[in-house]
Length: 265
Image 1 (cartoon, rainbow, N blue to C red):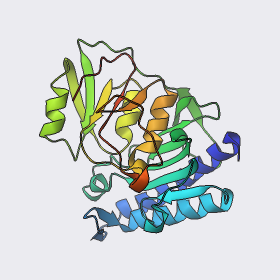
Image 2 (image 1 turned 90 degrees about the vertical axis):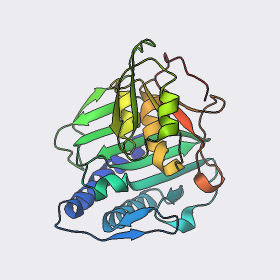
Image 3 (image 1 turned 60 degrees about the vertical axis):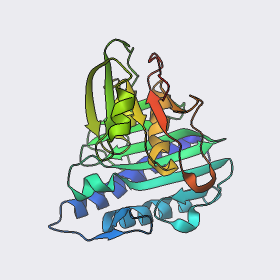
Image 4 (image 1 turned 135 degrees about the horizontal axis):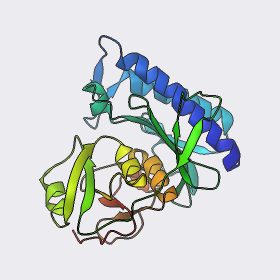
């Protein structure tokens, strides 16, 4: 597999999964089930996961694959693997708030290196090119043809007037306390991996996550942000957030533009 082979495939699968998701999103009603960890799951999660998994396994049979919806894939994946969250932001989907994404990422040596993040309800798509740089695509999102793309880059941050983005569904007191350590010009809420993308495009300077996440939640957004010149570090020691961890659980982290003067927890 080469990056030139990977990018068109994961982009196409994200768009096709997004179409499945939107069919259900725009229907009159849909069932919501509860998984063993008490998180919600819908037919859209399952349909998108099945489509993406089949496509990736067909195209790249030698690459290990981990997805949120397939518990038998939740094991150590080695140094190089694909990781998928077919519908990141299920709560946003259920409440029809639109802030949900399709996330597909390649992890190499513990680092997310190539990816796609597609927000079908918002009509926004971000991905990394073969050279690792991040772009946003605009247009019709033809599954077979990449449309017009624009390079994206993190902001040159002013530490006296920062723009903060935080979770829409998980913004708690611990998050507010940490944000309070910074000189904040304004803040916004967003769901799913869109928070990473808002930092990547310069629409925000920092996204702190003081709460539970899994690697499939973050890998694709992490790769977009890295490709735009940003970084994702652990909150406890400011070391890079790594992937391939036992159980897939992340520590608390900060996704940030590089000029932000990071504060201790």
